[in-house]
Length: 580
Ligand code: FAD
Image (cartoon, rainbow, N blue to C red):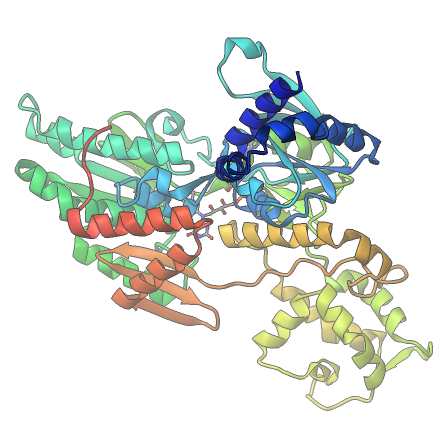
């Protein structure tokens, strides 16, 4: 019996850890110890389970989502300290910045994804993954209801619920159609890997249809008119990729229709890439003009049918329409239904995204944290706390603050209210005592509460919400895992700033975002980059910087190798236009 049970365990171990197991089998066989081991070895599996039962229950941490935020948390959290579970309808992490490259076959879909089980297996401690969708968060009872998305008769309804002590909501956001009629039915989106694969097939479909002998010239033109709604980074990158695909590969394969191809970008604002520095918007607009990509700014799409897109120019009231072969809708993000439902439960129904405090705790929902695109930090205004800050700083209760008293608390103020630093930076000031100067710029030895209010309240004008980007999501996930790992340590020795409206210190430092810059690939081996310190770079060298940054940011050596080899394959052989 023991031999049988050993063999069945060995076969399971072989499947789970093939490399280690092969090594073990070779070593054991060569020493002739296999039989001896099976006869005399302790039944470690059962003993292990029994020991586990005696251990005190670990705190349960449930993570919803395996995108940038969720994965970044899972990569760093110490799973020996917590019972960590993850729920997501996709069992992989997708490197979204390369999704536009997947739409035209510059990079293959499998090169930018990494199985989540593989990522968490490298961790110390065990993390359990459930491939399912969270359909309801019951904040009151600390439970989530999940629904498996695997279509299998054995699963029947496939519903299950999970309880948690701490919940990490990293559910991202969904496409926002702004309820524009026909968008959901007739447009492509570019949010998931499947969307990119679908666009790749549809682009080729448009070309194959356009060359069929039965079509009129107007029908060919319509089929080859590609419209992108939204002039943000995703829409612009897709337009540039499509243009490169056409110029580099398709023009040779479909020579009879090469003069009928048209790419149009519709943007509601006055410029494309308007979240970037003005120099980058101008460069992109000029480049697109040279490339023959039409940019229509100040237009709002009012409806989309399978053959036509209707829009209104903002300055005029009339509606114009144009025929299309394919529309990609890329106009920003909206709230997922499960997040909306939670917001209604906790009194945040009037918001677009979940509000958290500076420690990423969901406001009005105990023991829940929200990170990434589904959340925004509701930064506390310094103006609202000015009296308590003054009271805490005025140690001798004199009713005024001396320069020294001010210096004693300023570090805590800067950590708790990051807008103070932003304000000083915006004024190019290095010394904080500038804040104590009077209206005429004269030094003051003491300030009263009114003077103190006046010096600090301007800082609130610098408050900005963080953008919905992978950079923010990944930093929030990493921040939160650090807090969880240092929980006990920081409970005993808090690392956070002084609590101005209370006593002692905050347990942790608040989350602080570091911006490392952003890129916009513009096609033709040219890119634009906005780097910290107002540094703008455009052109071919920036494209090489883009290649190196995106290769280095890959989540594993496997995906890094695949992405770089896809780029090399594209340079040598071009993109593959097979419709599979
Ligand atoms: P996501 O990454 O969207 O992850 C959400 C997770 O939740 C997913 O795993 C999803 O499957 C899961 N989920 C959804 N619903 C449920 C449910 N009901 N139950 C359980 N799990 C669920 N940002 C940059 O900084 N730089 C770029 O160059 C860049 N390029 C981009 C290009 C494209 C085409 C796109 C679409 C986005 C790009 N972004 C970029 C933005 C970036 O991808 C997002 O900001 C980032 O993905 C947000 O991370 P997240 O973890 O909050 O959400």
